[in-house]
Image 1 (tube, rainbow, N blue to C red):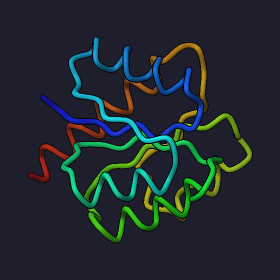
Image 2: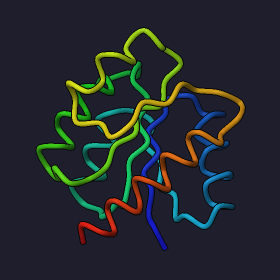
Image 3: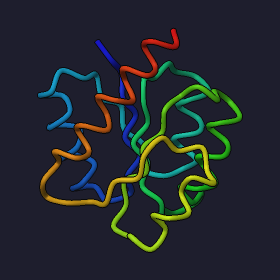
Length: 122
């Protein structure tokens, strides 16, 4: 079973993602901010990370940089409400950029791609 880390500071969004992705058959771990995500990646094994950007303590882009230094092959999907950064995400170690939506189909598709990429690499 693929293991996903969802990094989201909004409690309701975090719970929604955990429930929905668990229904999709993933083992889902959650973090409420970038620092917690970094700590979890240091001690755990994941097939993909879903990362919000604007969060307390450590911003998502800073967390992505740290996570890429820990595991450069770990696929990271930026999932944010801020579309203005969409063109710049390639300068970071992110596989995809998904705008938050009540329709999770695009996020699910990107997670599937990320997991496939990770499993092929391993």
